[in-house]
Image (cartoon, rainbow, N blue to C red):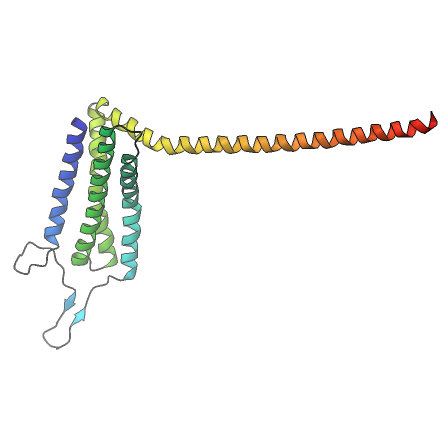
Length: 222
């Protein structure tokens, strides 16, 4: 229960912080507190406006790289938890925990991606801006790790069960692969033994033929 309280509280803190960025990126010209940046400038001495923004495809490419590097792992982990919840070898309570944990992890990850996109579209005016904004928002994703480390520092027993569960989840595929590798090795050994047995049969057959030839050669002389 304590683990669930800590996890849900962490998600609540992350959502609370992210709402600050959402409000700051809203297009509300009557609100002086918004951080919306206008890149189009219209000088008074001319009727044409000019876009002063330097953000281009390079900046958005860097943004995509950062999102994949920081968020892909959590999305995959969330999907694995949901997949584990569908396996009947686990107890009903464990399957429920896996499912809820996977949904929460996947949802907060997608939510951070959404906030990063709308905040950068509203504020980023250059390639350096989009990198800085993305890193700041992605740092919020690390709050759960920091809280986990804090709890471990206060009392290691609080996080031992979670660490053991994670090790079991990650070790299951490895054990399966090891088992598969062992089976493959046994098959290879059986094939080698079959070839050796076949070679021995051929040698025995050749010896029999040689003995028969010798006997046939002796019979006329006798």
